[in-house]
Length: 173
Image (cartoon, rainbow, N blue to C red; front, side, top):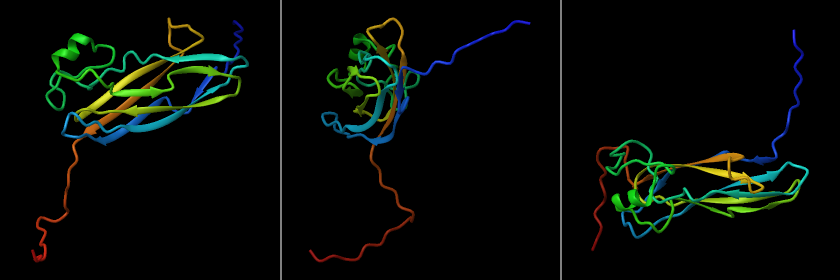
């Protein structure tokens, strides 16, 4: 028999959410109008030393649809890791506003300090959108310390009634 000893380490950084799910959000049919939706999570330094943190937002490109070719609305499905400027041009997507944005995307945390981070979802078409946002500590960009999953679904607005016929009274003109 062998004796194995181990030491449990607590995480250096605590995230209040590792997945930010916007669920279904309304998309304008007018492509020049984007509606932003916002959610927040907190980032807390659990270490005994000051931490420099940075989120890699370079993969937060416009139109990160989930799924295979054709997607739910006829546009190719892509992920943040496979989206390039060439594929942006081929899908006729505007290259102006990323699907997800984050403020702040870097900072310094003293021991025990917490920071609120605001994530915005800018859907430009109907469909499911997803991205993984890596967070790096103390300048070590070789491997993310933790990854935050960003999800949301763009939908067109719709009305539905629970009766087949609606009778409206006459209105004088």
